[in-house]
Image (cartoon, rainbow, N blue to C red; front, side, top):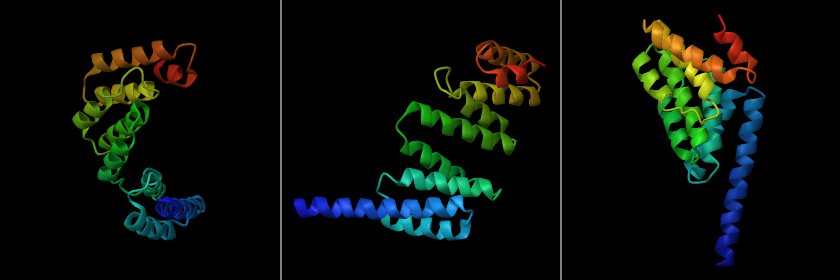
Length: 165
């Protein structure tokens, strides 16, 4: 039993060291090296709690290289988190990816799942308003922008200013 616990701890420590290596490579924009280590990591340490972070690094590399973001990876990453707030973040991100692909119906469905109690509600609602405007639903867009303005008044000048035009 003690031997097994020691081996598990060693395994997690080794995984943590790999995560640190990947982090350094991503920070230094050595993306090809980071991608190699990510591939190796996923073969060896996929069942560790660190896999969430590795997926985030992989998405970050895709974003920084202006590559198409792997939507399946985003979905997998979202499913690894067990907090509503983080799931809401990835749900909004999926909405943004659908918006960029001009899949407005899918984007609206994603954004509808971000609720007012989520930290990113205002940004999701703002994006939804933009989509509604693009799809000709001007009245619904106006309502969304008014809600953003009202909820951000005296709190979030950024959102208030954006919707105050």
